[in-house]
Image 1 (cartoon, rainbow, N blue to C red):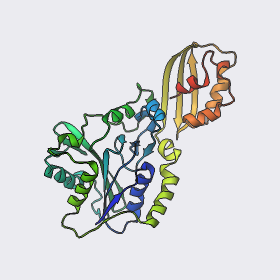
Image 2: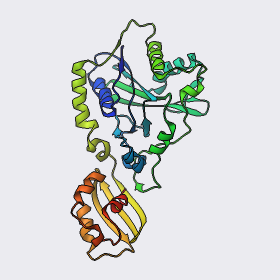
Image 3: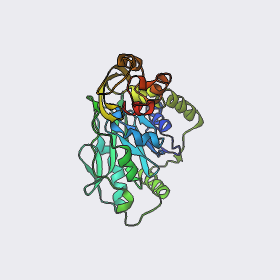
Image 4: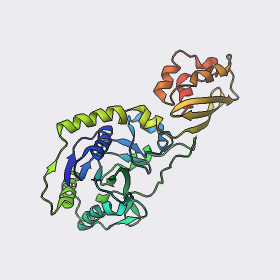
Length: 325
């Protein structure tokens, strides 16, 4: 087994690193890594419906889709991610407990009474400290999980608190539960860097293996994959399942009721109902929106030369855009 400490904190790069290693490694892998603030959504989720869009936009938090299923999570530097890659998964079945066990044992050895719970969580008492997910590629298996060590839990809640239901789809929804940081349960807390070193050494015990970093040629290939996939709008948003969007907003010009059908991240149909006034036929505005990505920047560009108040009195461009998310 190869033991890797990946010091990069860029979420698109780190998720690309997992995929590239899964496909190209010639040995089993255990890797530890952290991300700067980012929302990581499951492969089968509607990215829009999992986030607090206002909070994410205001704080410049990237939203990145991962290979594995499951729910959305918030990462920051107080959260540690671990990855196992197994090259010979002959059964073809997912096995969460197998890969969670060494992490649970490491925590228990520090006096943290951690156990496996349900399908894919690690808990201390009734508090969740880790979520896990898996993805199979041929006979290879990727297992990764989060470890809330000293995360900003206020940011976790704020970033993952979507507005009242506006998205109607069949995507997998996240299940929110009570979460706590591991450091709160430690009899003798330690700095996160020391904990990372401890965890690496614990998992590697009994094996004559040096802790490595990613090689230059690996970094080059991973960066290429990150640019093509994990930094792309099409993967992070356009890959979302088709959905309908509904939002009713009270504006200075009256109530504006937006109904949209979005397919592959692109507005396929839209109707703007309400008791507002306008001098131009709102069908023209609806036609302008169709064919545009359901993305704020793309819509800003599309509407740059459109005088919104001609269609909806008392509503400027910024307010109108707010009504579309």
